[in-house]
Image (cartoon, rainbow, N blue to C red; front, side, top):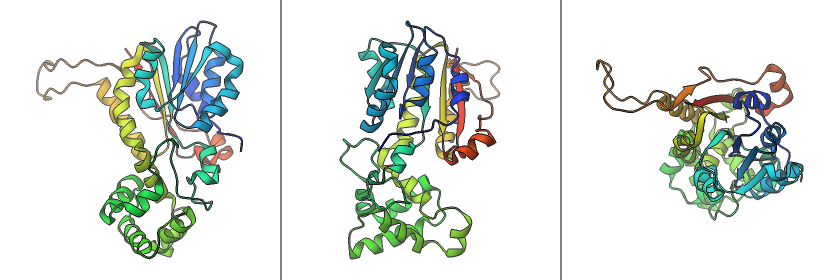
Length: 311
């Protein structure tokens, strides 16, 4: 299947990067290369973009899409949390802009056997990086009930988390849960019918929760933001697109902390903690997709773009 991923908020992100033709840019979630190809188009022969992704299918697809840009593009299979060390291997200390598009790619969702989608019946997988040993099946079958409850409550923000965890444990006591279809059915049975009608697909939140837990998505994000801001040249920008409130909250709070890191009590006349601002938040409110984009691409609905500029 062809790797197709419609980049959300594409024009807004490219504008937000304020691309310098001779600059060095990083796309930390390369996907099918949508953002990267737009950046590459705006670069001179001196400019370059480094694309990072942990998904082999993404690397392959982006390689084909970006091949005409030749030397301008370097593709690395890794997780964006290792951005600094990957750039050092390439002899790069500082960059002029970084993009992260944190959504699961359309390709990953639409390739049934990857096990990301509750709409297709497939083995419970959900690994972003298929070199990883652990899969969604391990979480569903091996986590204790209270751990499952924690994951579904915290990462799925599902008010029926307790009931879903209980039903999963009861079902797997009879036989292991192997497929997305089985899991979806168990979740359906855990949520009262009147709520199912109102709030989208009943399995959506639990699938999100298991995927985040398996791929450690929030930990990776939380632990990478400061380092990425440190990688920027003065005037360099970090553009991040999130798709749910948990990610957005992490980005918002990291940007705030980097803009105003002072920890002195508010009644101190002058700052004595010595913590200096690293830059400015460009987006006081996140940039949202246009009505038109949301109509064209239903996956854009929950997207938010936030931008930080290094001083």
